[in-house]
Image (cartoon, rainbow, N blue to C red; front, side, top):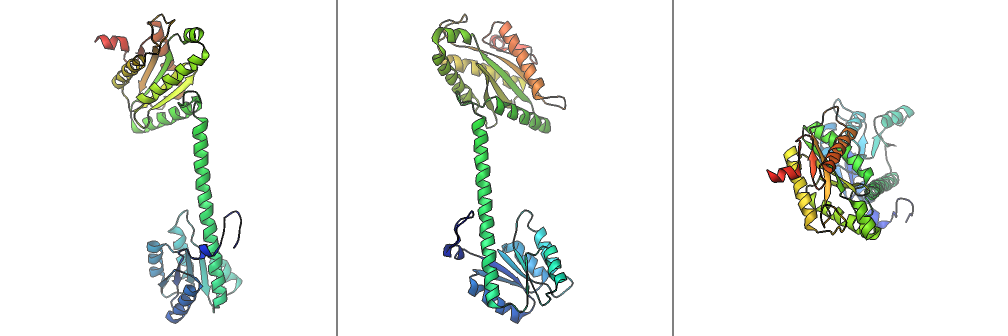
Length: 341
């Protein structure tokens, strides 16, 4: 048993399936080698007598090891077969051991250059064949462990990125994640020729809320608003983010102007339905919000900065017109006007 970075290599490993593709034109020798491989622990020995059969079996069965004779019948030799095998598995790796009666340095060099991993000179003893088989099994298992570790590391990094892009108070996407996602959605909308809507929202008179009820209650209020925004983002790519302080942002892919206004009206109604008490609001007894909307089909001149600037200007206009509304320059309309239509 061997311990190390790649885990335990024990009898358990040796009982796992391990298939070998044996490419040898001499039928008698092929039979002997196949028997030795099975005795050494190969669970399956696939046999081919020529280049075409070898390639076909390799593509269909994907063996764990290839034993490849260099001298094959026809115009294609083992070197050619090895090159085709490597082309058939981009990004993968199947060990290839050449078999040949030629053992000169040039022959070994040609085998390695063609994509081989080892070189055995005929006749091959059973002891050497068993040793090579075990070595290749260990390499296969180590590679699998490396792939597993790489996948685990990728998932861990993905989880870490998700954690650093979450606002700890509201559970929404934070400013860092928002910037990344907005940039990505602009590229996607530009590629697809689809409309993209961005909303910036601000809780009305939130400083008065904090001054009256205290920051602990203010934090609970922000958490409640975060839950409301999360609820309205029902489509997989809709994003609700805490932009900063009491300011929030919404990214709505594939949402045209009319749909953006409908969404904004629904959001305003839903927040009011939560009846979050605001005892010092000039607008009434419940918390409200104002928002700026911008919608476009992004072109080469569209950037995250330009969309944010446009949405921020629309937010300023909504506040100037009395708050408790969303405004869109593209439609020259706010949600209060829309309710009156």
